[in-house]
Length: 192
Image (cartoon, rainbow, N blue to C red; front, side):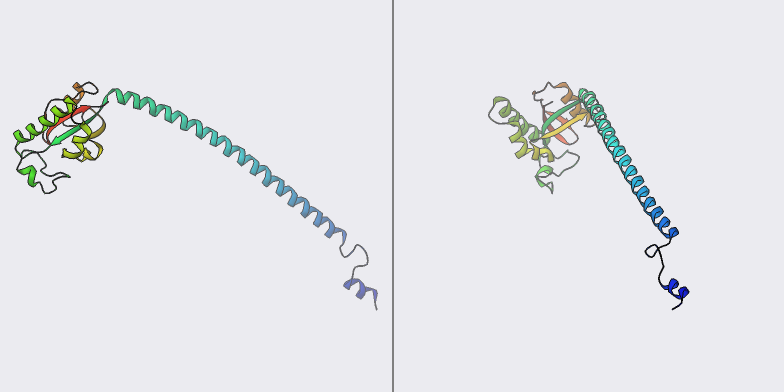
């Protein structure tokens, strides 16, 4: 067997690799380790950045909540909260309600009849025979009946002018006399 032939099949020294191959393998391993370190460092930086960002976001949310509370306080100074009982009649702008979707009863109710009915409700509430919420839930033509007549908070310009004026004139807990609007006749209780 010839030496050239033997050397082409199996290397004589170095366990199958020459020096340049060993260096290239070591260089490759070093490069991989360097890349892993870079990825880990970048990952650590990102994690720190995210946690800082998260803290900053949390601070921002806190600031926004404070601003919102201040706005709410400012708005509440210009707002009231009220419940009401509405009785619609033949002169109401919309002659239908949750109780009377076709408007059959409303179309046949005079304004005077609606006022008389409301006055009886008011007398029962003021004397303590009935609760405002109970009467509103059963008899009010407004969809707020499902909440005991509660309209929630509102500001100036959000309700019909006679209703708004009467509500803002009341003290918390007071009940209005009969109030006429395009919707019908109301009694209003200011709740806030």
